[in-house]
Length: 592
Image (tube, rainbow, N blue to C red):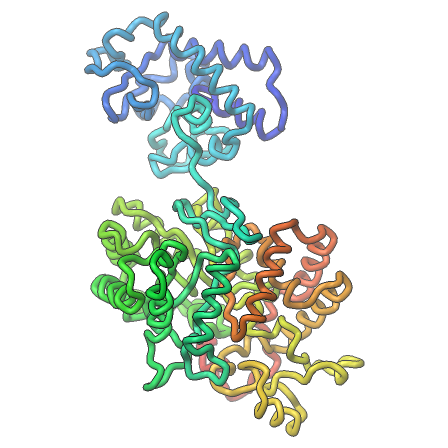
């Protein structure tokens, strides 16, 4: 991996131990390359490799297959003095930049050979198969094809010749942490790494959108504290998600910001509670997102919470126009509207500069965006690299067994360790309660009348709908905010839910348990944000995630879920009740 990463990567990818001849060939080429090359190491400066095209052995030694690409540019090698312990000094006048005292090829070979062998040991042991493919140009910001061959379609960048497997094998540092790794299990609940940060978040987290709100079943302050006690002090949870705009719905008596105050009052009850809890909050999106407001609104959240830092700070929805940020059913990007709207919005650069300043001040540990997509994640990440500030550590979107769009619209790909290594927080994992089984689906199937009544908003039996409205089971039995959740009640969505419910029954579990364990097992999901209106609901969720920690869903069950998904792809965006006179508007007046 130090000098021929393509060979090590190939061996690892095939899960084969290199043959003696294979190893000997690569070592011979590596030593020849080192002898004719030499190294310079000066503090933390880049050192020139010099011409690499004199013979095939030197090109092979550095994993460079294309001689023309190698000789066109003076490629760079990142070899830090602190990493290998070479003596300090100044490079000589040699074209290869050798160090005094290490100029003779023979003497360097003595040092290089054990390092090369140790590197191969690390690679074969499997420390970082992916890193050899993924990070050959990490410091230069470029990308290489598999095997560290230079991509001839773009100018070669700086090549770190020392791979992470080498440093890990020599004890000079561990491989870069990957998001969603299981770091710990507390009270049966797994904790996963969030992005590349040192934060490990419980894979079940407390959602707080309605805490202290105006809804008929919004948890009051006392119940909110009970949920925190059960979840954080007893249940193994350590993450809570809130926003400056919560509760929703709010009122003059229960204004926005009240939810953060309720969390703050719980923190003040006992010393040390803040250290047991990671807090994510959000700034109101759209035109409210400016460099100045990001700072000011964060400080407002800190005051209401009574703490000196947020662990994660998110845009509640993007500053720019994007069709999915309004939770509606629009899929197409409006080019004409976008030309004007995007110019008026804060840029990715403005956003990451403000977030970087908050990190520098110690007011936040990481940041990201909610209700955004791969464009938002990669736009912020690129802007952060340009400005030398930390990139986003996570995104947050609605996600469920019914709504797997992040896996198919690019966000899962962009979040992966192969690219931006960003965490993901899923909300509406139970589709606004529709996946709990408490609402009938009103599809006219045989025997359906024997089950629970449909949501009042969809019930064709007016008398029964009125009864449900008077004694609501949840928000789908009341008008108001539930009207915005039409995406979970389209006929296509209800048909898919009917199939998932039957599948859950066949495997001896509830619809809710299937939905929760599905989310817990998805590679793109770091944590699921669940709102509760009772401690009993929280206990049910805790049980499902403890079951998830014991083992994955049965492989055949996972395949049956996928089969249903293939028949009902993105049912949230299907709608069979649009009117001819709606004129390019959806049910919540969104642009179609």
